[in-house]
Image (cartoon, rainbow, N blue to C red; front, side, top):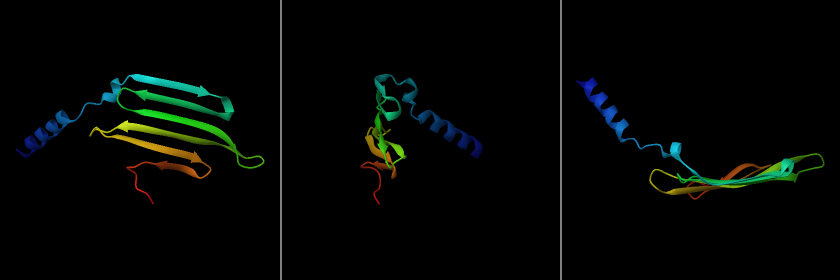
Length: 105
């Protein structure tokens, strides 16, 4: 009897799970500008509420030391309907995200 109850609960949870709309998402916007070794720039948006934009530039850190400095953001719509956005920089100091929903040190 317990086995039947557990099986029924598992089936009920599986049927109640939200459908994954990201598999059917359409691309609404796509931009791409690759400027070679000096950097790049791209952006996209999809119909399921995802978006991302990023750009990178070559930065001279020393006589023979160069690195890409990357700046960008991404956003997505959570299952509760709220849109979350993360802005970030990645440079010689590492990956540095900022967002209203992320804890601060």
